[in-house]
Image (cartoon, rainbow, N blue to C red; front, side, top):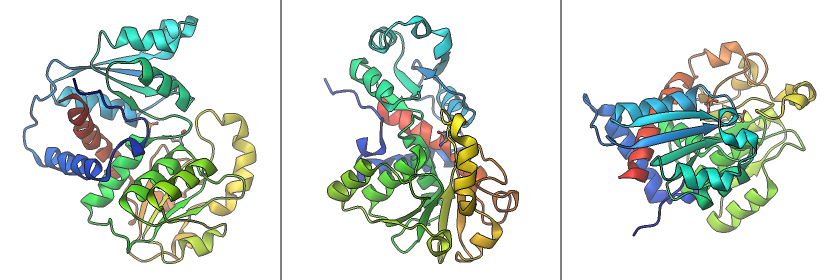
Length: 302
Ligand code: CP
Ligand code: NVA
């Protein structure tokens, strides 16, 4: 029997698999009538944290392809009363066909996946947000804006979404500039791993102006992620010079595309003007999560 596949990090996929996922997502997007390819399949979403996009786009993707979904907030499961994650994984594997987890710790998803006998998808942890980066780059692929000639810049916190962006860029051989305040760089073990394994071209730049100069693709994210609420006020001070505003963006190329995984904190990491401006592709980016999730569910389940 073929071993089940999980998506816990972007590096769980090969370059060819990522390209095939994107082609499949765009094919599904182009259809007038979607197939009932996942009829009879059941997906559980096990979430420790809030979600609008990831939850609804996964549920909608499954339902539109004929499958069913069960949303499980961890506070309603016996997990909340101390049942181990490894027991939960083995039991749920006997009821459902695939599980999407959103947890505080990456290790929780990894432990669940190691005991589960069904495919497990990371719907965000403290370390990674693979589905986000895969759908963000699907959007760039759709717009024919994926080439090593593009200047890709991640500005703000070197967080979970940044890590997954770095992994996509490493696998696809795209250079990326990361602009974070000192102390907020992406995880150094991850940087070393990507450099060794993929010869990743990652440049860390402290000065926002030099980072954005000539950029053609710029992404940012909240300064305090879920689970870091207590640090939010301190972070606002440190990150202030890293705000994506019109003045900073004027240093980028005229055709620059602005991305944000959302939810956005307007006038913190990004101004209203930039978020709603002509270079922003955030709504298309949000939509494409659903098409990517459809392709991913078919990939893991069929
Ligand atoms: N971008 C994203 O994952 O959004 P949600 O937190 O709403 O799922
Ligand atoms: N970095 C953010 C992403 C939210 C989708 C967080 O983890 O809260």
